[in-house]
Amino acid sequence: MKNASPWSLALIPCISLLLGVAPAWGATAPPLSEVRVFKVESAKCTETIPERATGTQMCTHRGPTKVSVMEVGLGNNPVGLFNGAVLNGQRTAVCQVGNVSEACSGAGTLMGYIYVFDLNVEAQGWFQYSNSSINPPRNTLSTQLNIR
Image (cartoon, rainbow, N blue to C red; front, side, top):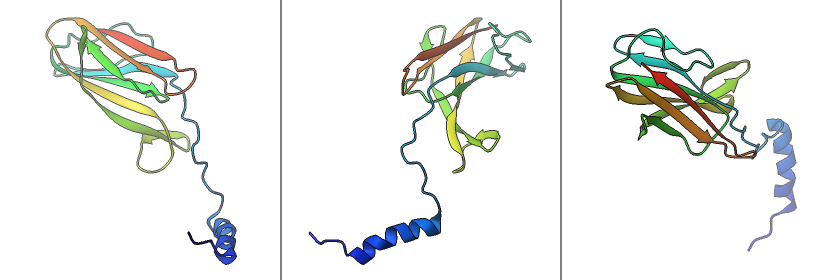
């Protein structure tokens, strides 16, 4: 094994000064702090769901329907259900860039995800979503919404 030359080791602090302060590698991920349904879309209408709502209000959703869930913090076991059946969902990472939350594009700090679940609503039923935090307190959060 070759020993590093003292001159090559001396370059590390010099390069660091030129590049500025190094990023904080291994920063703790934010614990899961909120999950909630914020939108339900079907052919009949699109509803924005207010906080603490227990069900849809504007229309009767039937057929292909998309349910959007906001997750603040990071989890490792997302589960979406409609009337007990497991749903497939797609997620989009959300980053904090300055004072704005937006889809991650290489800038900012990861703060959570938006999940979109596709379901086929034949009759009124319950949508449920839950996830467990990846770090302490390792809490599990859940939300549910009655889709009319």
